Length: 185
Ligand SMILES: NC(=O)c1ccc[n+]([C@@H]2O[C@H](COP(=O)([O-])OP(=O)(O)OC[C@H]3O[C@@H](n4cnc5c(N)ncnc54)[C@H](OP(=O)(O)O)[C@@H]3O)[C@@H](O)[C@H]2O)c1
Image (cartoon, rainbow, N blue to C red; front, side, top):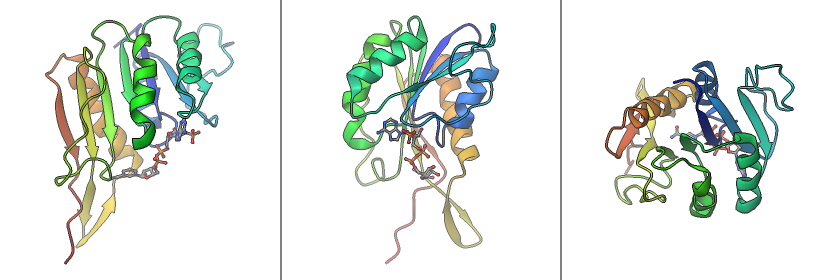
């Protein structure tokens, strides 16, 4: 995984470990979000003397065109991978806005919370035709008779599994990390 460009939406929160792993693997990672959050090896003003492997871009999902323009500048060329965690109401507009930034056929790894993807409602359809999409649905873990949310590390590990499947050219699929929350009656 070297010499390639990745766009990671929502990459400064629970996906920070995923972004770090991509940087460690030699990817040039672009991280649009509203607030700067340090990612190891990120050089957010581009003065890193050759160590510029990740760039944070100030942007909001509520302004998808501006987000895409800023991300395009920071990428400096077509993205070979899109990892996306974008909340439901803004997901479609943001994914469509960044579509022109992707290399032809570049894979997408999209992350869904259990609010938008579950056994009753199913998983949302991928937005970007022409970009094979691995969908990761975040669930819960059962421990000592209780359920808890996944840790950020568990989430990043599950998403990185999806990234590896995407980069290996596996067919689009939905993958569950953890379990669905049990329904209490
Ligand atoms: N089943 C599960 O285990 C599960 C599922 C979902 C969530 N969670 C938990 O819930 C916590 C909170 O979830 P969260 O959705 O806040 O995730 P998060 O990944 O912690 O943070 C959201 C990410 O998206 C960015 N973002 C949010 N709103 C944005 C906007 N309008 N424009 C641009 N970027 C935006 C944030 O950066 P900025 O705020 O700087 O913009 C950040 O990078 C998570 O940390 C996780 O622990 C667990």
